Length: 580
Image (tube, rainbow, N blue to C red; front, side, top):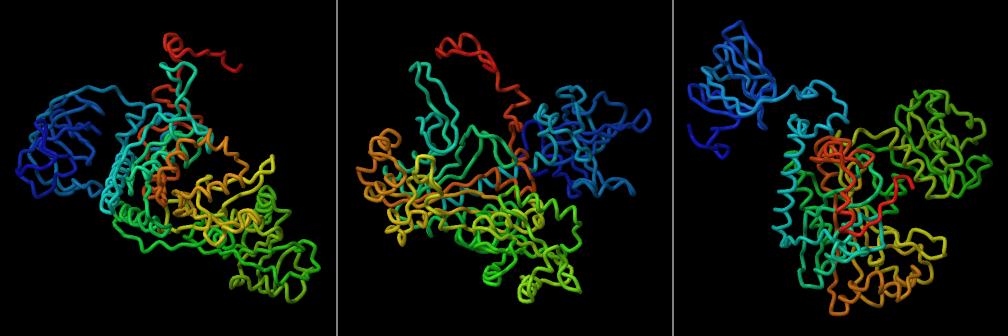
């Protein structure tokens, strides 16, 4: 038998690689006993499993092993007898005969079945994660993740990027999300933080002449957990000098498309882009799911002089729901309550029927208004039209949320639709002190056409910030950075940040910029989210080896835990009573 890369001194090959081309060969495999069956007193069948799959071993006589025992099996590859082929297994045409079995480790009965045919409580899975990882789905998901990581590295290397590891112990930065704090033993009363991202470190690399940096970076944020968020997460982080926004989009697109091809076997087409304003107007969100149509329509002109009080608003937006006329009144009431919870004054609905519009508001519409609604977005009999009349952003966001409620499939289903969203607002509102708030971070470069608006009409200033969206999930974001002192001063002033405060918060970055900062831009996207979509998972926990629960606990290790009194003393900490 020819050697292969999986051969070791203990095994010749993997269980799942055995096929009919090996008939007559004597081979040795190692793995876990997935199933044991006895046929009378003189014959036993073992399903032996490793990461590659399962092979059946036929043992003459009884064998003293049980499920999940670790074994080494030597046998001769033979074709299975007629009528016993198993088309559910890759090795289903063959079996190992004349087997000898060596027990490498015994095992207690596991707390749950490890095959895919039973549902297992997630709390139990996480408590025994080391067993859960043996299951076929988890093996697939984590190996898919490894394939994506390897592909991303190759893509970045091919584009001239240099991988640099940035620190995990960093200086506190009073910006963005809540940080995990690490007390210093050598400097009592002082603290490190775990990085939310390598943002400042990678910008300093640009000053240091590493004009194309990347890292598969571990980041940590002390924020509430949800389906697409964990305390710890991994991102492809990159920064480049002497580039424009278009260059960064091209770098990232190449890497993502390579990863998609490696994960799915199909290379997506070119990634399209739309501005933030277009995304809001058409889909009601800055992370549009493009797997389905249902594009928002603007009916404002048709209702500019309306006498219907419900439509007397600056903007009237509508959404066609194909086949939605079958929705029950109770379901329509639920949608109305959802719209109100999102800030709308109400929700107008119209069923399109052969007799016209069916709605409590239908009798108040004039002929032109009824015609516009009944033909919205090419509506046909059997469709439902939803309308929200309000301020532009509210109307769009409310209908955008209803669009997702009514039209979106599970995140991993259907085709993968990527889209770049660009030209985000530079500022997102006014804080309680009357200062502008940065929509991204204070080092984001304004759009060159809007520089004159910073002091006169700042809420109309667009930024050179951009997001990559896939199937309604924001994969990541980035921006062109400010490298000019004069523009940075104007932005700090607009945000109400004094020169003293800027020095205190960002001094080591601003100080580095004084020594020659090149024009630079960057991006980072979540690998956990990308792999989850490739794997068809709704929760990123399913593509992370050791995740936390929704409450932030690790059920397997029991973390977080109290530390010893000696550790408390070494760190000069004072621990208050729980709940105080």
